[in-house]
Length: 181
Image 1 (tube, rainbow, N blue to C red):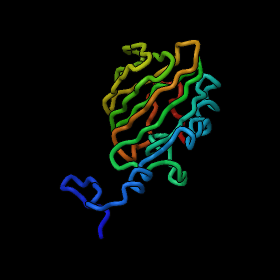
Image 2 (spheres, helix red, strand yellow):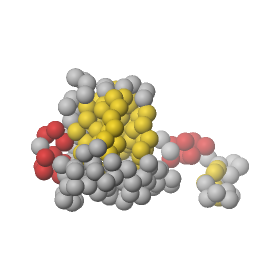
Image 3 (tube, one colour):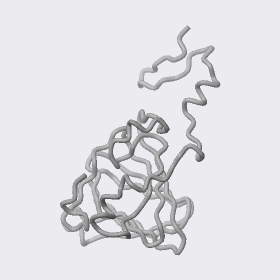
Image 4 (spheres, helix red, strand yellow):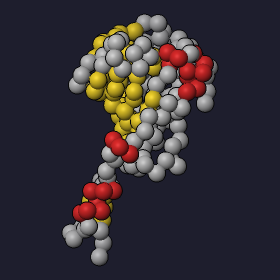
């Protein structure tokens, strides 16, 4: 008996009689099984100081922070990645560009100033401060940055619209310009 079938859109759906207990467990990632990975973006803190210190908490896929395929706690990404980012008060996510994919930010805690930068001149930018349950979508190819502006740490969901995004680049106006992994 087959437990899965593929639809015309390549989406896997359970076949009749599938083991629903196994199905629900295969898509479950609990908070207790996650951890704060302070090292994945540690290269930024090493280059620019503690203000760039942030932790990624991965749920689905690796996001654009590198290859974490050996972490068996991560659910494999089929269509997008989903993680949380823990941003200490005053922390900065430097200006960077995802050329291949849109990125969505959803604030769960704290207040975060998000910026989109001009593609040609990154010093030109528009900013918005987002708080609890606010969301921002940034299209592919648009430089973006963020910083925590609340006294409390911020926690945001980050969703990237592909299962394996390219590593972001840092434009000349970014404090991380020239930095590579």
